[in-house]
Length: 390
Image (cartoon, rainbow, N blue to C red; front, top):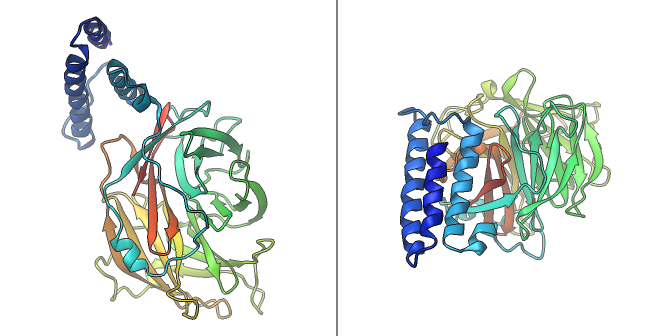
């Protein structure tokens, strides 16, 4: 670390000269590019991180602080503090798209970067404690984070887009483990756990969600939308693996489970029983430990008189992509498995940021009838944590 202290001491001396801004800019850019290149090579397995007696967490913090020192050296306090890219939330809530294909065609696969201050939220000092889900509503990001070892475990962090900081930390449960991938439909937030429970909250008051109800089923991630006047909830994965999706209907008022005439409530789809002959462009289900940990349900309504169509959006790394599946044949009377066909894969680019990606936190927001926003996050909470906005 002595090398870094000498380097920044040198920068401070340069700041006393008339040409400090130009010199600082050149030096710091070269310095940061070197660090970034070494980090990228290490992640690709082509090299190891330089041995400066700091772990991955401190390395990430060092990069962050070096970046802030860069803005300080230029006297640019505005860039140093602001959150970066902000998109304008619409006045009304859009709950479906008119044409999903058009909306996906218009998607920018290069992300804009938004960063927020943890503002007292506890950092994640190791990969065991991490962000797992992200959703957006009315100017606020919602992130689930898992830290089962602390009294403030299993939290929902609420981030103001305008203030670029955490404005509320909400403990979801002190007994359940691992709040997972989430989604908001209308004003309902669904939060599944890796134990036998999925909880529902109202976000009508965006900074203070209100608990409504829970169902006794787990999920690695969840999706929610409207279906025949009720809520349709999908839970991906169970205690036996990641090749199962379960579907439930819940009443719009109390979010209680709706049973069919036989007293049953669950439709269960298993990947191994699905005919994949029509899957394009890939024939392989990506639901392994390396991939899907976030999902979204989305409804397409071309016109008020048209029959709705339903789709599953599944997010994964390796590559960083959104897998689009059509969802057909839902029947809560017979409870027969639906027909799920993979129809598209959209690969996106992500910045050089360490530990960012759809697997850590992936989500979707319907901005308009033909406009979608997608989000991904870093894995851990830092002083400044990043969100990719597509």
